[in-house]
Image (cartoon, rainbow, N blue to C red; front, side, top):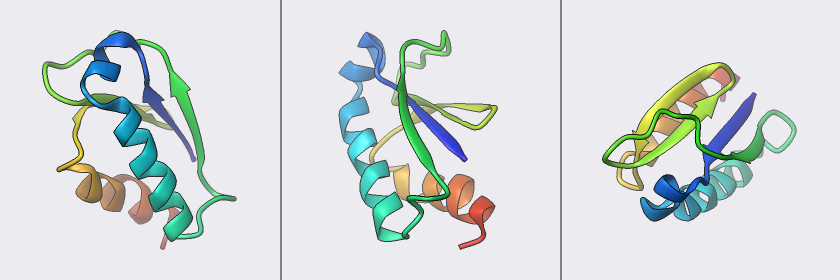
Length: 83
């Protein structure tokens, strides 16, 4: 699974650095280092007023915030990799 977190200027201002850190910690916590590749990306053109744009494999999600991270990770990552 490849997870790309937008680090473009708009998402950067909305907290993409924190989202990257949350992904890094969660991947490590669940020992998914061999199953998940984290990458930064520049603007995907899907900007949202709230939160960060994240692409998981071929699906693009907008509006990811620190508050919604755990639910997102559980549904879009853990449920898919079978942990």
